[in-house]
Image 1 (tube, one colour):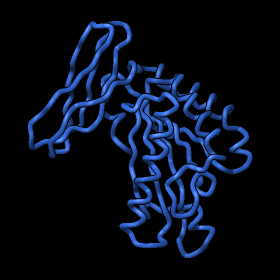
Image 2 (tube, helix red, strand yellow):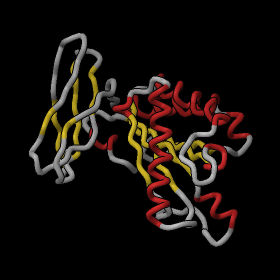
Image 3 (spheres, helix red, strand yellow):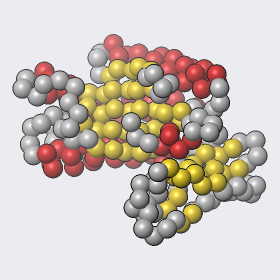
Image 4 (cartoon, helix red, strand yellow):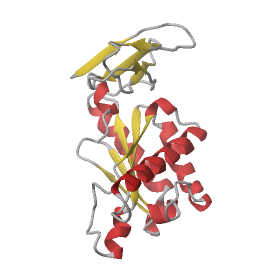
Length: 224
């Protein structure tokens, strides 16, 4: 069940914290309406208990969604042209207008480590710079591993790597309320884990940038 909570304020500095039923947990979500200075809080009720958090600037409507995401993709493509030429990452736009950046773990993390390689920081800086210019989006960072090691270990490692990317983006000025880390461990392989080539493809981090669409704001906060 989805729940939409709306809080408005006209102050120069805005904060919002709404507490729901103690037996229910609220996941992230918010959008700030620039024209009125309103704070919109969006929450997805998963039946567990929690607090409304989050703030993102504005929402998109109609044909503006496609233009906004097309322009963002063009800027990402231009900023990351060198990385794409080296096959370090792939960029594509999905059917729902979301932007997907698929990053190889080999260029971003050492084996069994959740620490971002210093050599990969310039690439993340470029991504963060573009994200800041397109604030009407929610950024999902999803970690994946191959099947080497135990399932529980892989799950934890994928979560730690996703969190490392989120922390880095935050350090570069991307609002934390827009950033949602998720670990999928070994559960969503792109190729067979029976070969090294397949395992390499499965070790990856995906960044999925979802537009905040007017009237459907809470959907932007649902991890794909």
